[in-house]
Structure formats: C-alpha cells, structure tokens
Image (cartoon, rainbow, N blue to C red; front, side):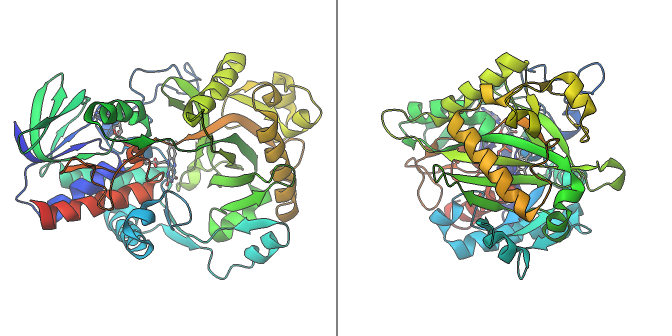
Length: 457
Ligand SMILES: Cc1cc2nc3c(=O)[nH]c(=O)nc-3n(C[C@H](O)[C@H](O)[C@H](O)COP(=O)(O)OP(=O)(O)OC[C@H]3O[C@@H](n4cnc5c(N)ncnc54)[C@H](O)[C@@H]3O)c2cc1C
C-alpha cells in the first residue's frame, strides 16, 4: 500500500500534522498508524471501586490512542517559549508563538469556544513573587479542561476520519529506507510512503531510540525532572489560580542553587496515576464541568537534573527512583507535609484524620526513603518559599504524592525543518525531544505539514 504521507502516532503532533496536511493538500493520500485505540475505546480500568490502582495494561489507555498522552490531560495549551519545549530554537521565537496561536484558534473552533485564555500580563502577583525570591514566568494559557479537551478531539476525529486512513491498534515495528521514501513495518503488513512523520511521544521513547540506532540517526541525552505532586485546599492558591489559572513559578534553592518549579497546576482538580513503561508515577488534571470540581488544588514541584559524563541516562535514574516508590508503596506514595518534617511515615489513620481529603488513593508512606536528599531539600525549601506568597502551603496537612517524574526523550538530531539527515523523514512532538507539551507538539505538527504541503510533494 503506497501513501504520500504516513504519520506514526495519533497524539497532538500527529493529529495537527494530519489536520494541516488535509487542509492544505486534500489531494494527498495520508495514513496514520497508532498503537492505541480510537478515542471512544480508550478506557483506563481504574474505577476507584473494584480497581483502585494501575494494573499495568499492555497498552496504557491514558498514554496511547487517538489524542495520545494529551487525551485525558487537563488540556492546558501554554502559549510561550519559556517552557514546554525548545521548538523556538529550531524555527525561531516569533514563528513558534504564531503556530501556538494558530493551534489555539483550531482548538477554539472545534469545541473550545467557551474556554478562557488566561494571561500573566500586568499581574500584581509578579511583584509579590519577586519580593519572595520567586520568579513568575510569562505565559498565556488556554485551559480546555479534560472534558472540553475530549470534545475537541472528538470533533477533530470527526473531521479527519474521512480524509485520512487511521490504522488503530497497529504499532509500527520498524522503519526501512525504500526507493523514493520509506516502508513502515507492522503486524498487519508493510506500508510505503514518500514522506514519513514520526510523532510517537514519550511512550514511544525506547522505540524511537531503537529506530534512530537502526537508521544511523544521532541522539543526545536530555534532562529529567523529579519531584512530588502537592495537594492542598483550593482556597490557599485561589488568588493565583483565579487570576492566572496556573502560576508557573521558579525558585532557586539557597542550599544547592538548584531550580525548583511549579508544574501543571490544577485548581479544583484531581491527582491521578500515570503508567510509563510499567512504572507508576503521579500526575494531575481538572475538569471545566463544575459538577466534577473538587475542593483541592494540586500542582507538581519538580527539580531538573542534568547529568554529565560518564552517566547520561537521566530517564533511567528517574525510573530507578520511581521504582523505589513502587517497591515501598506498591505504586504512588502519599505523605502529609507535617509527617515528612517530623521524620515519620504517614499511616492510613493519619491520612484519614487529615483535613485535606486525598483525591487519589495512594499508599501512605515516607517520601524521604525514596527521594534523594538534594531533591527533597529543594522541594521543602520551595514549599516554605511558596508559603510566603500562598500562606498555608507549608501546613502540616498539605499532601505530597511521589514520585512525579517528567521524563524527556533523547533529543533526535533534526535540522531546522525538523527533518532528520534522511530526506523526507521528520521527527516531531515529544518523541523528538524538541517539545514537551501539547502546544509545542501540536505546533511542530503544523510546521512540518506546511513544509511537506508547500515544498516537498
Ligand atoms: C496525565 C497527563 C496530563 C498532561 N497535561 C498536560 C497539559 O495540561 N498541558 C500540556 O502542555 N501537556 C500536558 N501533558 C503532556 C502532553 O500530553 C504531551 O506533551 C503531548 O501529548 C505530546 O504530544 P505528542 O503528539 O508528541 O505525543 P503523544 O501525545 O505521547 O502521542 C504519541 C502517540 O504515538 C503512539 N505511538 C507510540 N509508539 C508508536 C508506534 N511504535 N507505533 C504507532 N504508534 C505509536 C502512542 O500510542 C501515542 O498515542 C500531559 C500528559 C499526561 C500524561
């Protein structure tokens, strides 16, 4: 079977490539290969009743399928070059921002019309942060919420399904260089295309590395972020979340001069499990629907680690830490901040008596037995720094879930067109290591689609 363009992966990178290609070049024959299921068949078995924790499904419905890792995410599309990836290093800051705004306009058109675009512009919170050694980053953020994000995906699928051939539950095993293009090898047969866009996300990281080795494409190691998810009563952060939805705040620790940052803030949200390659970590999201809002706000506190020679596998380091929490807690561990500071584990009864009701059923335990001292010290320092701008953050009953890890893919050697040294083979989204967010991954998809549509086919 011969296509003009094959896209591997139906996450935001793949979807926005398909969207833009079909819009600009309806004449092209396009296929998407995705190892996960269609959107409506993606069901995580955790129901809070009979199945309370991650059971390690072979294909994780949270990470894979139409919508990719973003499908059940909080749908926060950040319009900024300050975080979320290094797309601007390849395509320039101006163009990167323009593409993020374009992606935003599509999200608005396909279901997000009643959602809010928050901005840090002119906020008085910046000064208060600065006065307390905290740096509030500049950003505009569209918060779709998990429910509207899902609707946008449904609408995009309805638009694309007759224009693109979707092959779900069809993992691509390998890629071969062929005459005038590429062959993708699957259990259901081999498929050829002239251009190939690879957008396999974080869950495809090991596969991506293998493919790069086989095709002789260079990769370089990247960073990893390790930390905890904080959960507290929503009132404590309401002055920040009401105005900005999410405050991206960075703190430099006094002890080690490490950077600790807030990440993925979810007002009235829930804490959730995440399963990456069988390792259970923690994440969070929230809903736009008022009936699904909780009394809590959650966010991650992360410390970035970069390694130097001879060790260069930051992901393996973080996985080992996450495995330790899985070994001690059977999954994610939860601890009251007060218990951590008193040097004792949290117990089921201490969590039961806690004034903050946990939104995730995790194992009460001791995070100091899991997280390296340097990382834990940084997190504790940041909690006290945040307590000055959001008093109550350092309360004994604040809950800490661990571990939260932001794995970053090895960076694939791509040029400023996001094309590898093999002509017509593009690597985009989180799988390239260039992006780490919904808006950057989606924008990279639009960027490559425009090149293929306008110049190359
Ligand atoms: C719970 C959660 C919440 C998040 N919240 C946010 C947020 O609010 N804001 C934000 O900016 N980011 C968020 N993120 C991150 C965001 O989802 C990712 O940055 C984004 O989805 C990356 O898009 P992508 O297309 O590059 O990759 P992905 O979304 O990971 O999609 C890649 C797809 O490729 C498929 N695939 C992998 N290997 C193969 C193969 N060999 N063959 C075929 N298919 C394959 C996978 O199944 C997957 O569906 C969140 C992530 C999670 C898990």
